[in-house]
Structures are given as structure tokens and as C-alpha cells.
Length: 135
Ligand code: ATP
Image (cartoon, rainbow, N blue to C red; front, side, top):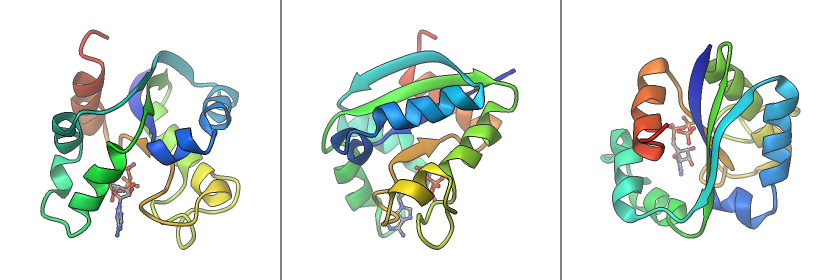
């Protein structure tokens, strides 16, 4: 079994899609190990997205991710990392995410793509430590 960090980003919370996302995670058969609504301090946002700090969209990304409450989850199950990436769909919700995925069904813009999921065992470990140090 494996654990992954999932975020329902501020756009997802603002649009009332938390239940939809959690429902899809549960229906897939994954388990919730932790779930918390929180407003993210700048420092945590910067650490979380450290790999993007040279990108042109970094400033916008930080502003967006700290703009309102988000829901952080620790999700577990066999191949949980890949399983959630499959549920989420590709980063660009129109060009990459297909219908039937969270982004493919509910999002239009890459910045406002509703969810985050760790992309490898290394990033899952790093991100879970950052978001849920006591887990
Ligand atoms: P996440 O890390 O949030 O799961 P991802 O792994 O699918 O997304 P990354 O390439 O790591 O995508 O980008 C991280 C986040 O940065 C994206 O989810 C999106 O919100 C934002 N982002 C990525 N590319 C762009 C872009 N070109 N313009 C605006 N925002 C972007």
C-alpha cells in the first residue's frame, strides 16, 4: 500500500467540489488517512511548489494557492499515487485531461485545475511530511 498527498485547491473549495472529489477518491477504493481544511501560509506554498520557482507562473501559482481555504488529504491504497493521478486527469484540463476525470469534467484553465496529487513516491514522501508532519 502507498500514500499520496491530494489537495483540493482553493478553486475546488470555492466551487463546492470537495464532496465530488472525495466521493471519487472513495468510489475508486482509496482510503482517507487524513483530511483537513486550511488556509495555506506563503512559506508552505513556496515549499510545496519549490520545483516551479523559476517558472513564469510561479507568482500567480502562489497567489492562487494562498487565496482561500483548500482541503489537504492523505490518501492511501495500492498504487495510490498513480490511481489518484488517473482520477485527476492531465494538468491542462482541456488539452490533456479527458472527460471522466476530475479536471476533464470540471475545469477549463490550467491554473484552475482543481486538484493536486503527488507525482512520484519521492514527492509523496516529501509533500506528506510538509502537510501532515504528524501522520
Ligand atoms: P499538480 O502538481 O498541482 O498536481 P501537475 O503535476 O499536473 O499539477 P505541474 O506541472 O506540477 O502540474 O504544475 C503545478 C501546478 O501549477 C498546476 O497544477 C497548475 O495549477 C499550475 N500550472 C502549471 N502550468 C501552468 C501554466 N502554464 N500556467 C498557469 N499555471 C500553471
